[in-house]
Image 1 (cartoon, rainbow, N blue to C red):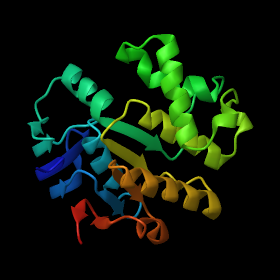
Image 2: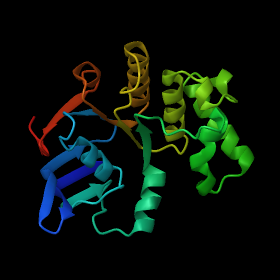
Image 3: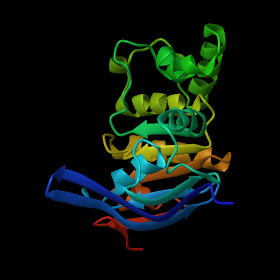
Image 4: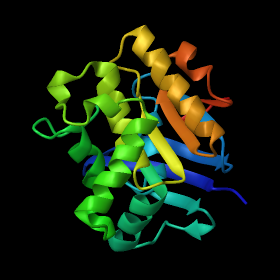
Length: 223
């Protein structure tokens, strides 16, 4: 069974009463559990809109999106929020870490709404921080970390709820080539443990590390 299945998905943004923009055009896409997929395209190609819909942060204008066999198209916001929390971890280009908060607290944050005690949250967070090789930075704040280290903290935060899917939107965009390579290696390692990785990038040398590459242009999958 497909983990992710798009059928004729379109996304139209209405800029004004008479002005609209079609960001996605008849997208048909299937992603199997355990895949490492790169979505590559230029700025404005529709790749961020695509990943926002995959991540249940936005809805298609038409078409259907099935997540693990469940049609999410008409699900209410509470259902979508629950699915996001259980199934999906997000990694962003700008890290999105809380600046006055330690590594440990940043990583534990998604667990606050999961019913764990503070001790349990911190134990799970420490485990994930160790997984990304930053145990010595538990009490460091983001401004005390390099860009590569901040992205590792962001990946640990994405992993702490044990999601099936990791969505990474330009995860190496703000990193030097060495740090970017290390982050991609970390994704490959996670993929080998069974995680499904979907990564957006505009860099061919980053995309080539994925097992499957989709090129998107003007809102359409072109190859």
